[in-house]
Length: 206
Image (cartoon, rainbow, N blue to C red; front, side, top):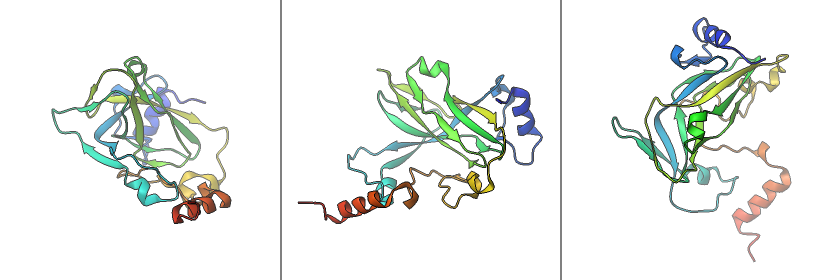
């Protein structure tokens, strides 16, 4: 069941662990909430390299933090992809999931927001992918409502061990500062990890 504005408001204003914080009544829609960008964007460095998913240091090195200064927008260039830090902190109850979806006005302008799924028990400040597929550069400011979030109540509450806040390797749980792509051993089969290690060691080079 999708939550209506009444349900969302109640969980944001009458809860010790608000669904959305800070909450702004003007951004509440009939069955969704408009989420906004903060003053922080992470762009990809210009250096082109091959990223091996088992090399976390290499993955972490591809991002560059950009702070949007007052009265000076962040200009999203054509075909550029960035990660935008949201302004809102989310706290998803154990009996719900959430979906981040694009807003129509931005898709009509040529800005694509990546869909994102929030698991039961997730808490933190998300990074949302944004790409400009138009031929124009787009000026973006902090506090701009860039996407919408929809909450859905589950038919039953998941097993405790499957909740996001109970997972040992929940990479993005409690995220406050930027976290890029995270991979653990569980993401790879033993065969895939063995191949990666051979490539990294040069054993596969002829």
